[in-house]
Image 1 (cartoon, one colour):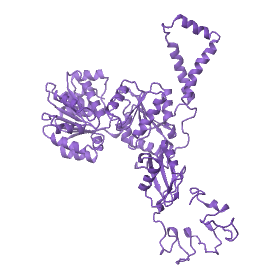
Image 2 (spheres, one colour):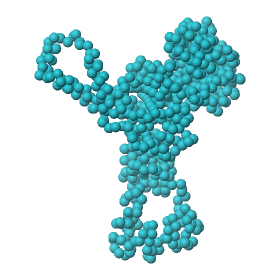
Image 3 (cartoon, one colour):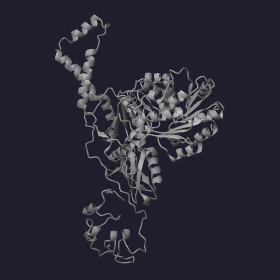
Length: 630
């Protein structure tokens, strides 16, 4: 492996890297830096987040800068405020031995007048998000006449976030005398269009797929029930007090809920998501960098650009759908040659998604477990004992107070005193934790839910959801949109609370987030078009009826699903699924050809006015409909 000196970097940059603790270059740095130092032209670098792309373009950029000129020579575009700030910090650190270099961050959510003042003082390097930069360009506050290098970092993510028009505008206004360095995780179609439109014979470096996941990261999974995930985090924190990590959640709501629950139980955590103000996000990141937090609870988008030293754990509260997002997440740990752990909290329906990640990324997930309460207790008591031994006696305690306490405790033996101290700490542990084994030891379900071999979501229920049976269907003039609207109006749920909807003729199934599922009870007893509604939790598999046509055609010779009939006229003796139909008074066969009692034999053998069978005959009814089905 090459060292940084072998890449052709000058001594001041090497000294700066040594102070930062960087010893060996990553794969993308080894390949990109020599090319960028010598090649006067466009460049494409394809590598994942977490592989060291900032140094891959930052080091050659600093080497090529004219630090004596105050003109803007380099423009770096990034998709998020956090990533832009992180790039600025890293360039400042790498250039610390070069002398003063004015690097100005430009992004939305901050005072634009302050950014304008910084630019007017002479911004040699501008690191910007596309929207705010375009605003400043239209105000003519950014002068790019002397621009030599335009760098697109995380180009695919910028396009995913809807910045295509902004990027086109910026590139079209800076098309003279500059080189484009484009860094991206993938060469998507939209990236290819940018390359074809704005770049000229670019040099390209592509990191092989087998190298995209840091080999210093151990990948683990823990199988448990969705409702136990937050308590699992608590137990992990209780067991290992050295955890310093990031927890990734799927939604902003989940992020805030997890952070709130942990904070309410005495753990130092903070949420980071898009609904927070810039000031709140900056404060959270400052606390995290200063290690005043144990865990940062974040969404994928909000966590872009997080590059904090010594992160030990990345915990996936829910696995991402895209393997590349898993790589982005896990790459937050094991930086600068250190080791780290990536732990996925999964339910038994996630096994296909887990196997899909393994196949796509070339990694192996090892099975882990949430520590039992006994193990947590033993470890915490051991730490408590050691801390108690190290406790220094406060010299401000007066002799009188010491004597008073001594007198109060003189009737207790040493063993009794130790027992009381130990019981107080022991009770604290058991008051904040349940004694339940959180590990789900049932067999993992591969045939339902998760992903198929192409990575597409199957029809299974998503984790963290409950399925409800509702006695409304297509025959009630319902489609999925109208059913969703009706349920939200009655229950107060929102569309974000509801997942899969399976609509059938006479009923439907709906998945609802566990934490708000109790609101579905409001449907029970409600009415629609004079009909009383029911909504019950459903535990079994859900199969969608593919027959959407409703009734049978009168001119068909077959019965239901095309089965043959005995006759073609309206008095046909063929019934459901081609079984013999009942004549008005003479038929001797009932449902599924069972014998029925004489219709004149009285109430026990007769029918109700609504056509419901009474007594033992109701046992043939489907388990979904129940005795109150209309």
